[in-house]
Length: 378
Image 1 (cartoon, one colour):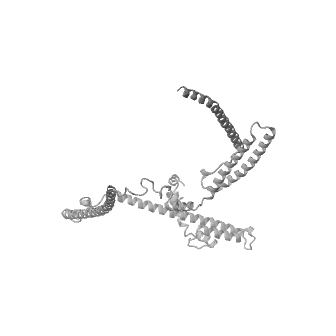
Image 2 (cartoon, rainbow, N blue to C red):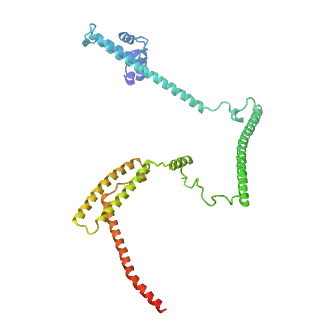
């Protein structure tokens, strides 16, 4: 119903309720109607149908639980003795009405709280924007009360008190700083005194040593100019206790296992090399088929001995404490080539020595005759 119809319609046709509805805005009319729902008989009837308290203190969850409980009893398909389609429809409509009422009440409460908060903010803003009513407190830093002359005297006394507080605070900070500096200076003095005492003792000892040297007290010492035996073989990176323990063990013939195994491996490979070179030297030159067969048998025996030695090398690598001290396997082919090369060098040296011996024997008679003739003519 619009306002134009209200103006054109005759007054007798319009009832009091219609005029009221036409003059009020729609939102206000809805709010008025919802507020009236709190105490309406229909809403109380809805609460009674749902078996809920009539004061409206139930929550939406409680309303839904009451609806589900009644639906199990009144729904036509529930199989209950109290099943009734009409009552179930009434309960469903009552549940919708109560939930709508609770939602609207929650909305109104939130809107009221929001309006209250907005009102408080507006009041605070007004207070901030409002000019002070007592402009007299803008002078003298707002100190004092009464007439301007009285406030001036009070302000002067306030300034004197504040100045005294500042002076006392400054003196306190100065005393604290002075005490900390005195403590630091005292610690420095004690440290300097200790250093001076230490240096004085060192200078005294040095003077006594120099005086003894001038007198010749150190001239007839045994072992002069020789290193001290106590520290001649010491490792600077090992502590004295460990060094002394090692020295005691060495003097009593103790050797670590890996050192013994390493020594045995070196001795074994040297013996095998010497035996191989000796067997090749015994065969001589040239190699006949029988000698070639014997050399091959010697090589096979050398390979077997070298394989056993390589197993000992593996055991040594497991017990050696340093990675740099580990050994690699000995190669049979490389050892055979090395033996043949050593044999050729021995042959060359023997040949050279024989040639030098022959040359010396042939040159000695001529040299002796020539010298005898020269001595005869003299």
